[in-house]
Length: 314
Image (cartoon, rainbow, N blue to C red):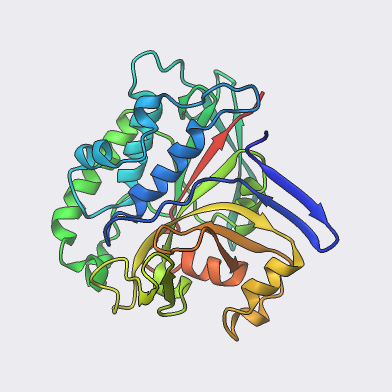
């Protein structure tokens, strides 16, 4: 059975990469939980029954991840480090591939980046690879924006984090980890990637925008309602949160459901919606309008961070 679903019916189309939904354990481990979901997906057999990822890194626990990063103040470069270790840190993990990028559009307003996953040994950027898996971290800033010191979400640990994160970026560059600084990664390009078979993304969003400043979630096991905060700064103007973008749906019922979230969503004029695995939600998947997703992704504090993960099929 294929790990990519492409269903076409009377009401439209749905292209979703199925993966196990895992709920985060703490208020700060949404990024680690996203990686858990990714590794669980990669541990599934491909069409030929071959395991893509080594069992030692495909566990559902976070023990080795927490030991590796040694902090509960997670930045996206921490997730890059974890993925690099998972795909390259095991003995006998195989050769490294390349991830070729090509600029397809650039004007005075923005530039769209088209990235092609290839096996060419002469590509300009080395990518982390285990077997048939590669990834690329895209951001508007491969470093620390000092202005974030004024954002409550970052303030308490900013000075300590800033030094640590800058050091991690230096190491990532030295080790040729797959980093790409972009002025503007268009939503169209991101949608194009996650619409492909075997391609998903971990995205940093402003959770308050994503949830429309607080949404009540239901825990089916506890039969009660609560507002799930991703950290103790949930009442500030920004609240960082990681989600997995696992598909795009053109199904009219899905789009209608996403637009019913709020009056603002009802004005979204796109004919598709985003399909998310949200580790802070009890729902198996979330349907979000493209307008709300993009606003949450481009909020001040995110650097528009996205890690694109590609699993190639023979």
